[in-house]
Image (cartoon, rainbow, N blue to C red; front, side, top):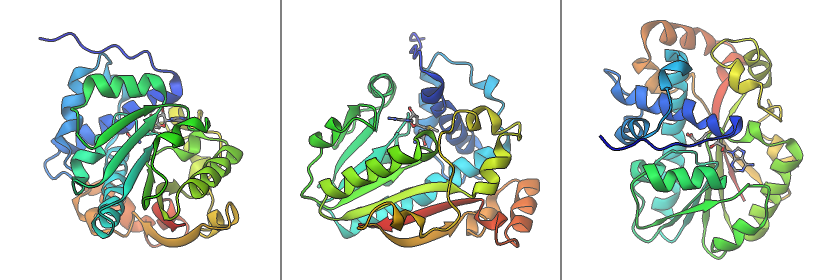
Length: 273
Ligand SMILES: C[S@@+](CC[C@H](N)C(=O)[O-])C[C@H]1O[C@@H](n2cnc3c(N)ncnc32)[C@H](O)[C@@H]1O
């Protein structure tokens, strides 16, 4: 058997293990929501005891369903704009390009810290359209590597809470100045749930590392930047994939879906610029 890859990630970088493990567990479920076999292969290649994460099925379904809806946003954009560039911010060890399968004319950039970009090169299969950029997102240089004259799909899965509010706004400002036009899609929690997360066993490890508080009003990002316009909010408690959740999680999600606050506890948001 080949030697496993050592990573030495910082705590923030190591949050990628949870989302990766979530996709791997979903892929092995009887009725997968996302169905990402690359995640299973990736887990096998890393020297890390994933069992110690003790991911519950609630987190697994959340990770899978939000990735599915972010993939859908990216797929829709690259279908409408085959000349697009896709930028996956805080890509972790996610192999999104292999799920989306964009037209061959699309250029794809995965951005994460240098240690994560290096690990991606070691454990993920190469893709001829994808480039790995190893950078801290708050550094401006990496955007110079991405063509600004093509429509841009910017996706961020599980990233924003790890940036401070002023860093998020500075990043959005740089993105909207760099690209003529594009879309931004990310997942978010309701602020009440984010507050609660610090006490929930399944979420408190990650919640302790977060630096910004999510917003409740989906129009709020319009106040971050004059070019940003709200397009769509998808409440993950109301999507048809809830039928695939394990029974207890399904029941809890359906009950939560009746409350206007709880139904927005986990959502995918889309903006145009
Ligand atoms: C919860 S993980 C999600 C990873 C991936 N999107 C996924 O769904 O598996 C958060 C990711 O954001 C990255 N990240 C956080 N802050 C960052 C920053 N300032 N610059 C670059 N990457 C960052 C971490 O390294 C980590 O890979």
